[in-house]
Image (cartoon, helix red, strand yellow):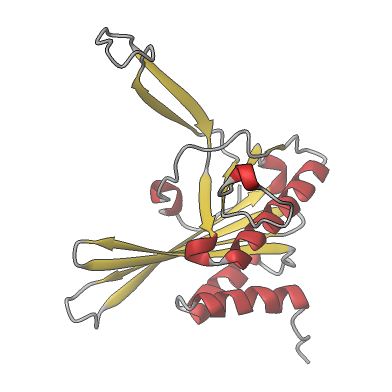
Length: 225
């Protein structure tokens, strides 16, 4: 007799159904990537992008277990004008929580001068780094004088990030923002408890400047580091 799925498995599958992006396909891939591990927390983030006359959708699913962070990314692509031929590109990555170097959670609040403890976070950005890859943002430096046209060289910032998710109440719903915050807390707890870890968690004072695409990080097949 096959055992019934746990509450955390049912919650994960329900999130994929609500996202509505090939839920059976995505669920099968996520289940396979977890390889029998019990999910502790998860985030399923669906995004839609418009490019001229085309609409592109993709979903990113982060699932945390006791020892792994499993990341699944699914894109679809329409191959003909009628939309009868569609392909799905799927990539998964399994990262031991002991290798996670930083978890950055930044917050956005509206009208901070009127803040009350009951106010909801308008937006959160979750950035996770594990490979040591860095992003360098460079721009012209200035002295602050709008009339000055002297060359002040360049200035820039360096940030570690392997994956960044931006979740807003306006686009994704208030509950999605709360879910992202809960996932970050669960990841921080597991990462800091790891005997090999040394993970680092930062709050809103260390915020990424932009949300990059997933690009090359999700063009490779599922593997475990």
